[in-house]
Structure formats: structure tokens, C-alpha cells
Image (cartoon, rainbow, N blue to C red; front, side, top):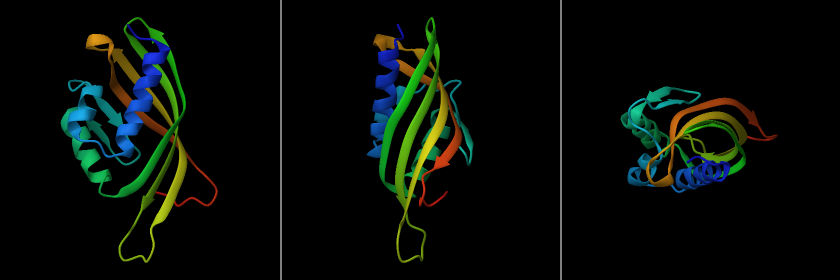
Length: 141
């Protein structure tokens, strides 16, 4: 059964795993495969294979990541929910041959769709990154 607390826990756990560039074996159980849609600013991906391709690319670009969940407010409808997510994302990026890395700091406004999974888990079925609001002095994507 979905609860606000279980959905918030999913969001915090998800971003913690992204911060440490967790292995796929830890990330995939948080997603559905068949029907998964993930909309990022640069690409839309589908299923485990699409997510893995995106993730393997971005972990080679960004480092020293810190995600802080500012909001994960769910509208629950039985065994599904729509979640309004705001996450502060900080990451460093280095573009060769620049002498120094740059720091990106922004709030990402996202909409997730989730469903109840086995053993009281919560699974992401749709993940849409909407607006990105950069902090003053931040580098941009």
C-alpha cells in the first residue's frame, strides 16, 4: 500500500543512490522495466536499458553530486500516485581542456508517477524533469 512516507523514502533513497553512483543492481529495483518512461532535459528514455544507457553516460560527466529532496508530495489514488518533486541538485563538471571544473547548483522541478510494488515497495513508472532553476553563480548545463 502506498503512503506519503513510503513515497518520500523512495525519493530520498533514489537520490542517495544517484549521489554515490550506485550500481545498477541497486537502482533497477526502484523502477519498472516494461512501460518505464524517463524524460530528462536532453533525452527521453524507456525501460531498464534506456535508463542504464543514460545513467552510464551522466556518471562519466558529473561528480561530487549532492541531491537534497526539498519536496516529494504525493497524490495517492489506490496503488498509484503522482508525486510533485523538487530536488536541489549540486554537481561538478569538467570539460576538457578547461583548467578548472565548474559547479552546477539548481532546483529541479519533477513529476513522478509511482505504483505499489511487491513487499510494500514503491516503483517509479514515469519520471519527468521539468523546470530547472539555477542558483545565482551556478554554471549551467
